[in-house]
Amino acid sequence: MPARLLYNGSNEDPMPHWQPAAYKEYQWIVADPQLLGGKLAIRGTRLAVSLILECLAGGMTLDDIDQSFDCDFPRQALPEVLKVASEFTDSFHVAA
Image (cartoon, rainbow, N blue to C red):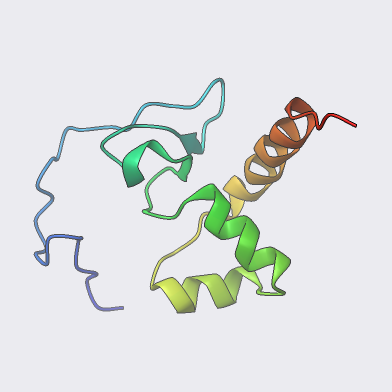
């Protein structure tokens, strides 16, 4: 498999010691202002949780996501993606 380019177009990590902040107690979900403007994201990727949910809702498989975004979506992250989505849907209330 060929080396993947990082977002700055090089093979060198511009911030080799930077680790995005974990979101709550999650292992795979991170929230950091330096990554995607603070959107919830999947650790080790530049994929937003909302993007993954949108793709899944649209019928994409995890393999489709890997191919479409040239990444290796960590399969272990999927339960956390769904759990965090569940938390958000439980926390918003619409006035009747």
